[in-house]
Length: 164
Image 1: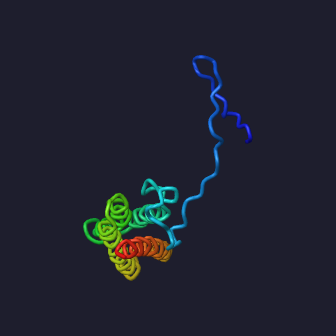
Image 2: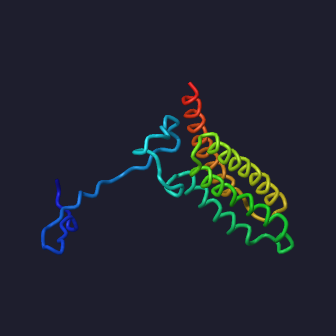
């Protein structure tokens, strides 16, 4: 065992207390469809620990940055619709993540997937109206879609295993 500079603390009685060493940890691969969702040693405890949510959140920030430059007459039209649908993706993932039953989780993950597709159309529309170059956002959307599909598939497979 290697001593770390912070691994020895002293209590009020001046007796040293040894903390366990800090070990590197690796998050589970969200594309690994063999992910066992009841295995607490491999499962993220917070939605924000997942790659799916992190990528989706980053994508939403990009949507907000890009839509800031849309014409002002779109404030209550395309801008609002795109932002609402984009926020729905990580929002529904977060809500589904904390649901207790697998069918409930699947319901929210499916809504998140549908919102992604809604955004895909809005990005096409913004591109065709020459409001913005949406190439980067579309590529990020595709990445989020793949991660979310893999996560959803893992939940579906677990649900099927539980039915047997």
